[in-house]
Image 1 (cartoon, rainbow, N blue to C red):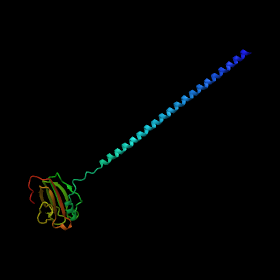
Image 2 (cartoon, rainbow, N blue to C red):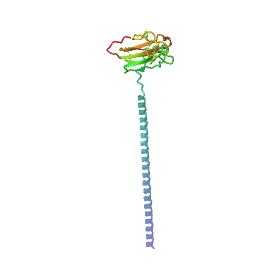
Image 3 (spheres, one colour):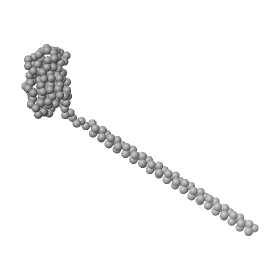
Image 4 (cartoon, one colour):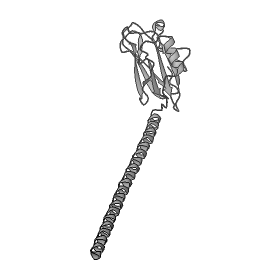
Length: 212
């Protein structure tokens, strides 16, 4: 009886030890798994941080693009605007066909100006223009609006007069402008109703001004 009890007691002890070992192994296994999952979560946060940095960079880039756009819109101004004295003369005299600009005839050897232009024939066309020194201006009569002539005003840098008023179509008067300056002129017959014109002469030549 004594030997049988001893064997049974040993069996119970061994069985208990086996059960404890299994429980400890299971706990160790669960703890390692939890640690691995936690590490994965940290990696996800780092990735999101990188995305935020990329967004900040794109905003900075947009700001630089706006600055470049503003710079491109800078206005350098208009160096070929109508001179103040010319604009004042034509505006104060209500010059017919004057629209606040100069017809650009720089580079032309000769330019024709119609005398008796406009709906009623009381205008020069072009009423205002820009030419180079040495250019010959030819005034040609249309016969519209009655008899006309061409004469420089007191404010003009150059003096000239075509002669007595003429109403014949095709009649011409010409003058070459060799010196830079402002040419202001009008029709003596229709001075009071806007028959005025102007020429801006740029540069100068070596020759003398042709008499008119």
